[in-house]
Amino acid sequence: MAVQDVSLDFAKEMKTQNLHNLDTDKLIAFRIFGVDSKFIQAIRAEGLNVTDSDKLIAFRIHGVSLEMIRALRSSGHQPDEDKLIAMRIHGATPEWIAQMKKEGYDHVELDKLIAFRIHGVSPEFIEKIKTLGYSHPEPDQLIAMRIHGVTPEFISGLKSRA
Image (cartoon, rainbow, N blue to C red):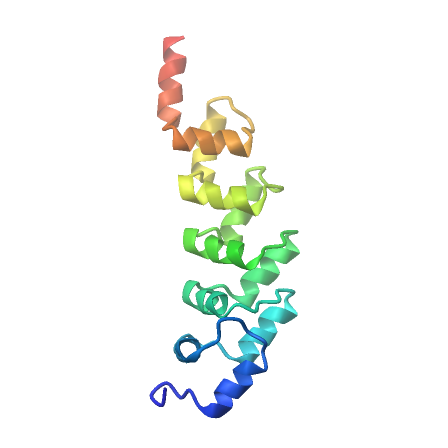
């Protein structure tokens, strides 16, 4: 604890934040990953009443930032803690979401956008599908295509046989 500067003052300060699962291991992790009162209060000021110590550590490990939260909220999304972490893990960034909006997918739920990233539904994939005559497949259809291996090449092959 001394090596990570986990002092009695720091422990008391964290105790005032009303956090769950707060123990000495979490306090050490807070110091390692930069979770402090300023970070917690800034996250809460963005409308997320995070009380789980593990989630705060996960925010720092995976790079959930205030800018990300603000960008998502300004685009109409209301992400919870788990979705923010999942988005960072799978690369569903606000910039990527903006690309998806340009493709016409501007009102897609965050869960579906995360599924897009998990299964490889990309702006490039959508563009290729559009060139084959499918103007705006539903999000579930795009995900199903990727899960079942329906590629633009596969569709082209089927069309050439018709």
